[in-house]
Length: 471
Ligand SMILES: [Zn+2]
Image (tube, rainbow, N blue to C red):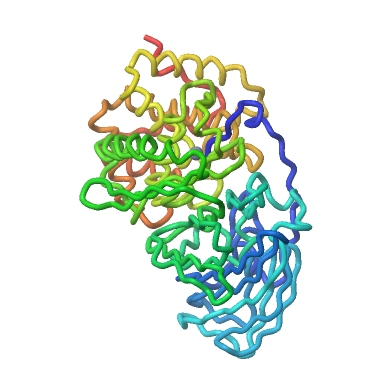
């Protein structure tokens, strides 16, 4: 994610702490968001079918969740906030349920056995996000209605407002999204568009399939009056771009620069790891962009030539979100405390792109100004990168100092070794999760040297080490 204006980076959040449910299954153990995700099972695949009423801003939904029990379960939890539940079945037998904040607590008719697959069906309706306190949703609102459409941006915990989910990056799964809308709207979502089915009432169902596992906060559904361009990159990687119809002329330029970026980042990070890529520009001005998997999400301001973070044009933030497909998406953080692995890496990548397109002197000048900026951060914002705190996930320090760490490591080890470390880290943890400690271990193994002092100073302590550019 990139937040657009610096002032937004200083948003101070207060989070309600929600009591743990008594059975201990609610909450996957995240140090920052103890009620996110759940224990006792491992979701394999979600099939989410939504019939969307654009005028009333409501939907009828069914979620089919195919899962594997990792322990015997007489009761289990999903995360689900708001909306009304009409029915829940587990393995086709009616189940009883209760709700407690984020926790949807389900008691199947027959207890589930360890290592056995099970299928949950939830039938629900309502208006996603309606009546849900923002204190339950740091940053991401999840499903968001705009004047003539919908976008979905959920980092870190907004998915639970629109479908029942094990809402934590530790439980990645594949997805089928079947979204039914009026004929004059288009649906842009994760993965590949397999079919558009005409319904008897004149509506259309868009069938999207995502074959690589996705962390729930990266699942997206965007509904709008879009113009679309489809093309391929390299040996046939599908690319698709969606913009509001009146911006259709911008599509070829978006595709061209994205192909250039893919070629550049593949030369640095290795082969693009997912089944597709592209961009959706929704018809709203957003104060952020998000690396929703295989289809990064932007507001229409992307097309207006705005300056992002005062460092350049739209291509810089496009580079940031594309780089996340390797770092953040293919390799997901093991917990939200590991946010540096997302934002530090994507910000470093945007600077590599800037260096590639504008030169090293320009990159160094920006790093110098960033170093000065973060030198003056207040103590509450200058938290260690390895433990920034739940209200600093998207703070300026995580991005700017986060990128400087990798630039400093580059200065120390040289391009060849640094890029070998990044490639090895991605290869080792792709389609899975990694912690900051996993990255450090990879860096030491690939470089063959102890980097304890380096990482202690840059990641675990508050004091800012000397600038990597100060010689
Ligand atoms: Zn980001």
